[in-house]
Image (cartoon, rainbow, N blue to C red; front, side, top):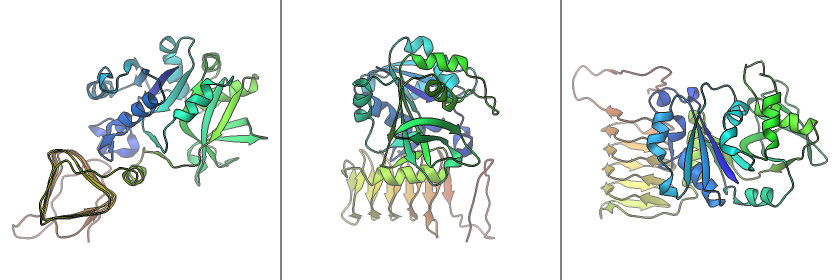
Length: 354
């Protein structure tokens, strides 16, 4: 089997964070989501992986390289414009050839990996296997209707959802999917929908097997989802201390301190992760917080947040919480009078002040 990862989206819902960063490279628990997807595919025994890229191709290529760090072969497939998931499959036809493959959205995180799913699909005669999970807001997803355990209907983002079973962004196909993506027409969104392609398979007698996932799954496309994914992944990490923690500091619960990091006179309450060469000085880092590499947090408090690399948070009198803080950000308290808030913020920023 081959692997196909879709990483062509612009990540509009994560603006302004993704103005300067591909959404698939935003880290969850200090590891880019795309890296987690590659690892999941590799763990399932697949080492030939294509990555469909778009406008952020250069950044993704620079971060992932040739795949040697995971002992996989990476092939980059350029999608000229984001015309839907089925169009991405169509674009990848030369790479896939006649082989069976798993397609994984590059901004999704799923509990437990996909090894058992791949084994089940490889041992079956299914033409396709789709992963579903029950959600409270099915109108935001492609949804499937099952009858006697079989897929009978799929609808993309329905106003009146016929079920609560959402497609979670993991699909397995054989070569017959190319017949489908070449036959369907663009939707009202002017995209080739993967739900329409799978419906084509159903309507033409191909075997489409549903797998209902009961663990957690997160689409990290929005800030709240990213923080949820961070919380869930942190809770599963095995704590380890590779950096320096001084005797005046206190680590509570599951805390990871990565290589070169320093924790000085501070309290870290896990689950939390402190990135490489980061310094936490006279501060409090609360649960469900990921602080990436080369960050300084000094005389401040933060929890349930993600802080990206090369940022500084210094001498903040109020606790920061439920926040996504980007790269090279500086949050400091000025000692100068008169006291005032002075900010330069990117488009779509949100700031809450007390």
